[in-house]
Length: 545
Image (cartoon, rainbow, N blue to C red; front, side, top):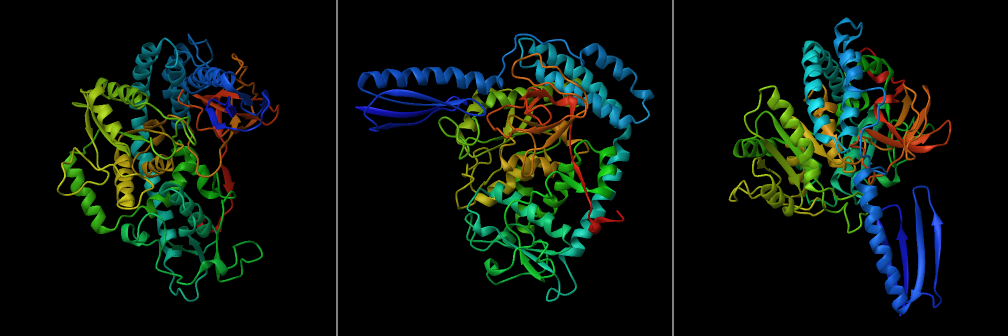
């Protein structure tokens, strides 16, 4: 019997095992950017033994890769943001000329040190240190919270008013339209939600009324307007495939369509808004995208009433943590799009967050909202964490026990949109969320949190990827770094780094992975030593805000 196998040392295990193939034996190793793939073929018992060897080695490689993100450290090496320097910076914060920016820098360093340290054998030490110092920083930040909240609300209102004006022209028969047909994309609801947002932003930038076509999409026999309020008052009933695509050559056309990825708008904010946001918010780009996501996420009255009824039934109140556990279509046996994360990884962060707030004396019980499409998650949580109260919404029928929700696959048909929108609503209202940013739902929740929280990055933890809309971010080094581990890279102040998109690489240790564009080195680097590069985009639509 002949075997032909493809083995991926990227950490995903055996890709395929097929009987048959070529008659002669042999092994071929092909190097790749992130590892190497082994192709081997052999016959009989020899083939079976080799397959067992590669499966066993794959378990070791995959475990080391996925659980440690290339590195497993036994102790925390000394570097710039040790507890003593953080303590000194904290004491000098009062004298800082720009209080918010200084406090934000301390928060980034503190969080980076904590995430890094908790992967070592001194986890409890770093948890305790983080809780103490972070509580002190958050107490100091409260002095500017009301002022920043007021400024953000005023800016948000100006943006919302401008969107409403463009989306509701005096005459739809003469207005310039940009049409986007979401029904042509047979992907998950979260993915299509972000595609809609990208084209929506593109349309507003172009000063065109955005028209969404959703009839015939794969989730339901009902359209967008059944669950969510219309994005505007104009419609286009004809097939949009024949329309010209918006470009420099077609900008004079009254009605155009939009397709593909809007890379020009990715990681950019209107220039007259960006400087203000940098002074009062910790994540300007996510806040900007959140303005469009929150506008799109306006529930129809019947669904809003239903969700509010669920809110009362499950006892959703203040100081609730939320987790979004994705064990469905993005996770296969060896992982196809993203790694599978045990519930303990989510609850580990939740535990620290509750401990932090219990130290402040503002919590009496531990309540966690659970969003998942897998019923095993619910049972696992209840059996392993009896000291917690777990609540869930999803799709709950009036005649069912509220503590036994129906778990609906995110890519099914019946009830899928209602289930996802309900989860998105409760997660965005949670005080702290742990999820995976490889999921579009997780990132959409983060965007919606921009309207609820003054400092969402402190209330959101991803187990795999960084936040992004379309493509990976670019970083600018604000501090130099010399690698202390073979998996790291060197960087100098001013270096530009391009993040590597890899949902199997965990960023929950305070490090990101990317390429130094100056040296060509690929590796990990401490996130607090960099800043995300957000482009200032010239846009006349939002002038005067």
